Image (cartoon, rainbow, N blue to C red; front, top):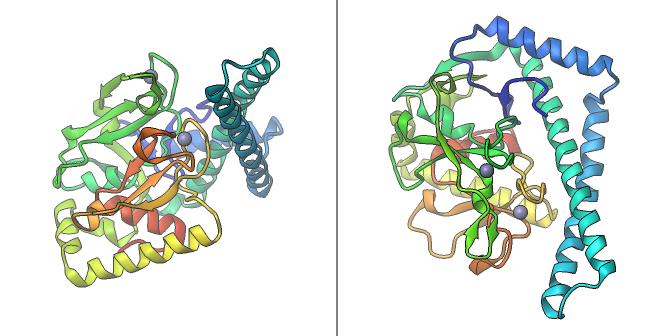
Length: 310
Ligand SMILES: [Zn+2]
Ligand SMILES: [Zn+2]
């Protein structure tokens, strides 16, 4: 799956590159990309079209799975025919998810190659934790040793100041409820090499330290602008019946929906991304991304609208 052999995300950031030079990493990506292309793998606009088609099919598959499950819940049990159909759909969904991940890998590689000149290496320390937070979306290529699901870069979201040691990898099986249990609770600490990123450092957010960025966000004027921009994005997305491109649900593969909490305590408690199959009171898909830090809000705005918060 991780055929470019590096952890990366849709923003074109590479992870786990503390010990390598930029030249080594980029030339490795280019080699893998060229090899993929010479095998006839779709790239560019063709890859984009294929992703769109597959996402469309995935939505239909998810809807049918949910329809069958609802039917089964209200009846005594599924018929043999429904059971077989359900199994076939699950297999198809797995296949689509894996093909979509491959498509994301290709797009990420293209972004990295295109932005090669502005990519720089960043070592994560107390002053640069905002680089990790702002890049913790949909990281490709990190799989759980226990169950094979995707792992997600996590930290304790209640902390207002995050230190490098507060980050960890958590299996996305944690969001899959099986009865009273979670499908997988595996987590692991970051390794030393995980504290090295290669990313576009030209965004103004990254010209300040994590602490300075936090202070900027407490400015009332800035806060107001961010609210306005997020609300604009939210209504744009909902009038187009779209989710965000930046994050997909690891279970359903669909774009996440930008939502707003009912009684928030402030800007960093207001927004979250939820799976389109999310429902209140844990009755739907529970995968969500709490947007509890400035770097996350900024990365989301940048990726969806072309401009961050500063
Ligand atoms: Zn797992
Ligand atoms: Zn979901």
